[in-house]
Image (cartoon, rainbow, N blue to C red; front, side, top):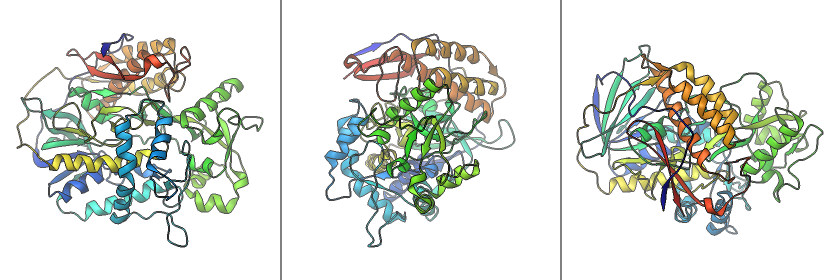
Length: 550
């Protein structure tokens, strides 16, 4: 059953970004947008099939979200563990919204994909006998997480994939390039992208990459909130481009707020350093202002409960105390453990004037991971022919209402190979993009800061009909502030506006609390809301949300 739902008044968003006509074009077999684990792994698998690949990345090839991942990769490697047990933990975290087939694919194919990553050159932490160290993280009932460098898994994965891509002369990399819009042919099939190679000029460097298939691997959209663990480039470009191209987007209301980002006083709008839950996995405790462990008794797993449970516990404690943070006590773990196992965390804390060996660590929830995104099937195909999505930009169905810790890197490994196999099974000939289309425009860059503040205030961890209506009103006002200067900051601001409108519409429509979506006015999960919200754009740029019952 599909039903269109009510939504608050929201701003119109463009069906196409205003930009100069492309001054150059090039052609490839497959264009992969993004250079994290999803994008680079997809590119390497496509090369195994003999295809020419162009990777477009907004930053340097070794930058982006993957390298910041402090957690690990979850995979069943212990003989006493089972894929069914991993699937069970994933389903519990996803609060009955995970796609069972997608979860089964991930947990059953994951171990082999991890071994392939090791073969590529990634070096994970091992015991003296050479066996992989397996740890626990929030929501896992078994030790099935592999790490690298203690808390530097992402950096090691990025290094290994970067080196492998650089060794392949048939993978072309275009760095510092912002994707603008997906190009479609007259039949509606995606046949390339327009992009801007970042430079000094407002419109200089606009070009196009024509391709027989396009894979979105652009990462997350955390910058739509004022406080996030995502890097500054995570402005939802891939999801926004997909929406403009007519692709279905689903589950965007489920934004995971990491419960323990390092709290930095003052008006900090950049990436918040992450205090990985692996630290809690080794025994660190969350405490309130009086030193009491507020998660004990709140959940059977206490500090190792799923992230939404811990984030809610932290927010409730902060609200009760009138505080802007809680505290993480890792002092009892000892200096040797902290310095050897968590060097990145120790360094981040000390840079902020905190020594976790002797001090309590101030922490607070921050936007961390988007469980929703471009809707895909088990082969990574979106609803638009020729367009695939992988990684955080995609919604494969494995996360449901809340991502289980360390499943994100695993998901990217598994579905990148599936995408490559599907593409390699049969590509159409290159087609020409249609010319012209809907009216294009961008919003003012001055909308970015107030938009992010409004989203954190009314559409963050704490949500209600009233707060979401207030947020929608702010967005509508900001949406009227258009710009005549198409350039990087206005393109990003427009993408953020598109993401914000989509998220608010979905959060307003889902009148229940489920997973990482918390409605104060509907504070329980409701079986009637067991289903998915699918978002798209009307011809005039209005956001529309429909309901699909499971």
